[in-house]
Length: 474
Image (cartoon, rainbow, N blue to C red; front, side, top):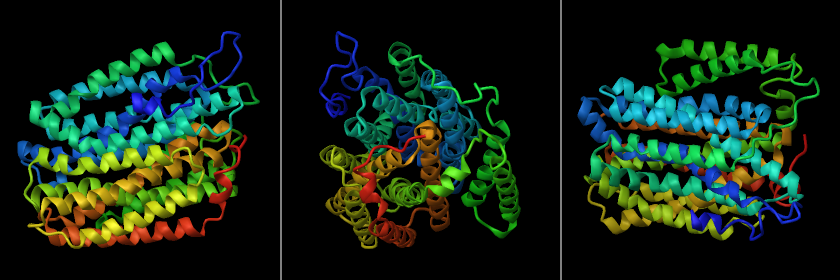
């Protein structure tokens, strides 16, 4: 945490005369800790899939529901929770979400069946939806208060926390399994939740955002939220196991999406401002880039990790340790480049490294030496540190101020859409176990995504403007 706090502007939070001189550094610990709950839970589970499968007699295709359940809940819930943040303020939503994380951790630690473990993961997904849009909302509020349009230090701290915790997650998960078994991976959420609740109550401001021009009488667009949830749930359920017998899910998704568009274009205060999105091409491209980034990142996190355990024959703790250098590189790269404005440069370098790492996976086999495995994860540490940071900074500049919570939630929706796609590909290539042949097929898919990401980064002219302009206004 001290490394992250050091990234922030070295100014007093509140001068003695009450003037606004710099960002309130007291916000950093609860925002950073809350924002890492989702990525750390996303990544810790990677090394538990094999022992949980053994404990309940479930194959890899079934235990992957522990991954998909959290992503489905998060992808659907993030924009809705972000809209709650935009309308009611960051503090109450943050506190409610982190409380739910503690409840989910307790349920997972005691769950007697795989079904209840999946329920715990759904609750974790919903609970961890709150912190990131709350953090982005408060950062924009602090920018308005201080007059500083580009708080690079705070944005970097959020990204470093998320990327580091995502990369460290498998290592932490392996260590927790070694200490107390796979249930400790769920139980660790209880103290984390309590820490967020204490710091959130003490440090987050209780000032709600400004109400819309109607004075708030229109209320939340609950119908729009419901239609969005139905469309996303049906689409992602199909994506988890795409097959001809599930075509009806695509029909449900299409009907719900059409109804969503018809409604959101008609109401005064929509859940999703489709007109704003349609007119904001750079923001839509940022969402697409983030989905490609996460398809590759989560393929490494889950596919490569499973192969290390089954195809390469490493234990859970050893597999986590092999991935540790990736986190160290990610932290160093993000910290070194976080304050630099070159969004496009970050994406080009990151996507190139991602393509190189994917190509290297084609060379791995059951007898590949440990030094070569570590070399591959070192390469993947570069995009881990660059790509999500660049996409987050682009969104900060491209999204309107009064929709920053919803826009940030949608970024996570595209993130977990990429994760769900990765899970679907992994399930398809590892049907009988995590073999080297399956890893090579997965690597080809990852290479294709990396090349698309590289092209999208090189050709997007708006990235040069985003890095040097003030954030979009409402």
